[in-house]
Amino acid sequence: MNRSILVAAAAALAVVLAGCVGIRAGPPETITVGKKTITLAGLEGFNASEVRRPDPHNPNVFVTARDTIVVDQEPVRPERPIGGTIYLAWALDSASDYSFPDDNAVIFLPGETNPLPSNLACKLRLPRKKVIVCAYDKPERPAQWKYTIRVVDRAGRELAKLDPWIYQD
Image (cartoon, rainbow, N blue to C red; front, side, top):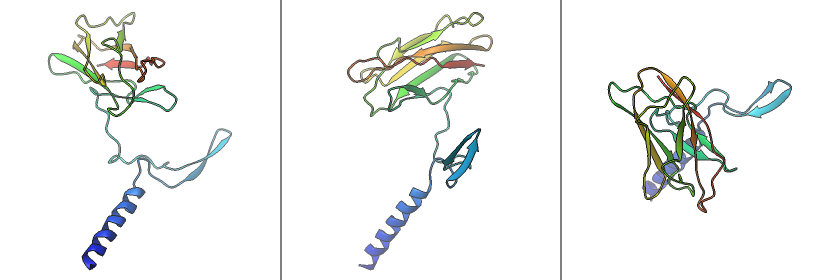
């Protein structure tokens, strides 16, 4: 009987302590920004053990409650490999009602001084359509491209497109 009480107490303590740890650190504070006064918690920074470090080859794509697309990295900065191929694999929440529509869900847009890699290609991973992978040979010099990302809901309705950046060093 005493052992089960200790186990229950330890479990309850773990739950309480886990509730104290959040992504942002710090108690609520009131701060004046310009002419606005707001109260926010977490103004001491973020908790690195609770946040996934950005992966320059695997950006995550979120859809907000207002059906807008957000990429967790802006811009995406893929690392230059020692040799060969650079890849980017955009992923949606595997449990969400959203998917990428087709192999053109990510389209790189050339700039005046930034032509696209000649062998750039993208492929949607089937059957769930939650990841799209693009690959190209590393460019000879640094480049930057805007890209368009497209997402559809369960009914096939396309959300408003997002046009973030890729900076290739």
